[in-house]
Image (spheres, each protein chain N blue to C red):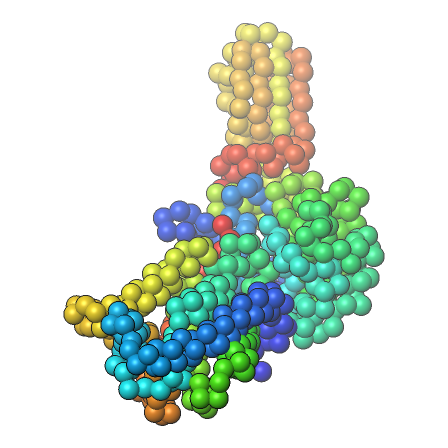
Length: 303
Length: 273
């Protein structure tokens, strides 16, 4: 069952682009990564989902409810942490749990205290005396304490140390295994790679990929490097019919480097017909794959 | 429930200390005026002569000739239209009513507030409820200050407290109109200072028009636009009658501005960047 449905969602800020015809569907119990560089449109998408902003066109629904018109009903089942979390300075962890519980109409103190123990946060400290990491932990506790069906997290582990980041990932995995859905926005590949089953990559306001990591790697093709025996062999290879799907990024007389989408045996047969001294073909590592998504027009024909 | 009690408590946690400060200060000012002005007025009456400049200024303040009025009527009318009191009350209304959403956007906390499962209208009503509670505190302390001030005047200088209460209701509506104007302006902007400046233009314009009305012919035409045009403490103190038309107009202004503020707040995009 789809919990979050975004259909052709466009949001502009005057003439400036926010997001452009974004569509995605997230099922119940998914841990969905929303990955993109700064300014790609991640936060805009989240703001529309939380009803802070109206869509210019298209629709966004959570639990089948319209995110703008029925925003308060949507948020009853959502826990959210904004990208740049600011809390009222006079709150302490304890008073925040009490206040947020009063606003939500449920007592979240017991649950909040358990989460605080896990994240090693002293709830008696006032927000004004907290470090950025401590505030981030409190934000996470407040987002998780009412056990929401859906968590919408905008770069939630920023300012946390690696140990705490791992602990947060553990908490999120636990929630997902209990049937909760997590929408996890980040600009850090490693974080999403460690955590998410599925990932959408957003760039310049558009979704450029939406798949599992394995599938993304598969569709991205292979990275290829060929070194010919001499310049004549290189020239001869250039003159011959190169296999379809081979795109060369760097080409000199003796060395070719690029990408290949297609049957590797075809490429192997092509190279075997010429004097070759070195031949490498491999799946791209995720880091380089995502660099390509962030900078290129797409990978494997996607755009 | 038309308000969210958690949100009301949150707002009160921030507003009560500052409102208490305003209330105590306003009460002290009103107390001192309530003690001093009847004595000044009594001195004028004993002399049987009021300097023409004072008479003109007083008539400008009240909008009517007060020559035949008693000590308490004039003195306590002056107390309740004194510029210091008016400025303090307007400042409180502006301070409190520019918080949502302009103030919250400016300090970056609006995201947390809007992520709550509460409709924007409910959030707006909750903020209004908190404002009204603090308004009651400030106006109540002002009235208390007046009461305490009158403990030290002679019996012939004592006001009719029933009439004072009627006048306070009229003043509360003027204060409410300024607050609602602040809500309406703050609902549409992202910076609190812009909202404050907008309301200041409205309120200073109101004060200027009201002051110039009896002194300068062109200002007479603009007088109905001034909120203070609908606040006549002398008429209330003298007759003891409700100024129904004035109250109705002020209530109408409050309602219109409040609904406008709510509609803007509920329909606009809100973002911290």
